[in-house]
Image (cartoon, rainbow, N blue to C red):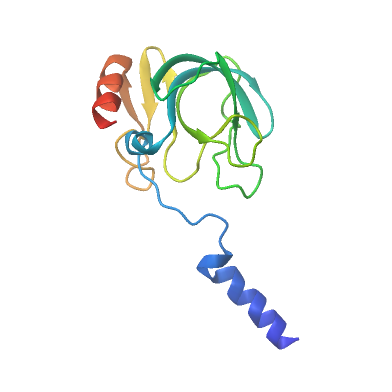
Length: 151
């Protein structure tokens, strides 16, 4: 019995016992490695996914006007989609969904989204939350220049 308890304790604290084993950076860095980067408006938000209308593609190809984006369901290493409320606008850096639920997924390894409001992009654009708790704000024009030059 002691052996079993010891094994359980060590598995909880070992690197292999952690659900997400990844590193990530700020949004512009994450966008370089993402399949699709798009300006979107949230149409529908459910527990772990959102349906978004693509307003502009910044990187990648997608022929549909609306796509479904999977977020975290508990231990998926994906970002939560709870703050993506219907009618809100975002810039998302996405990957193809590996679990076949939705079209794309939004990783939690780094920053893969930024809010778009009042003509500005707001988020952790060139630094991470761990480097500074303060979000950056860039005009959409400046943001497009930076994301294009980074890609």
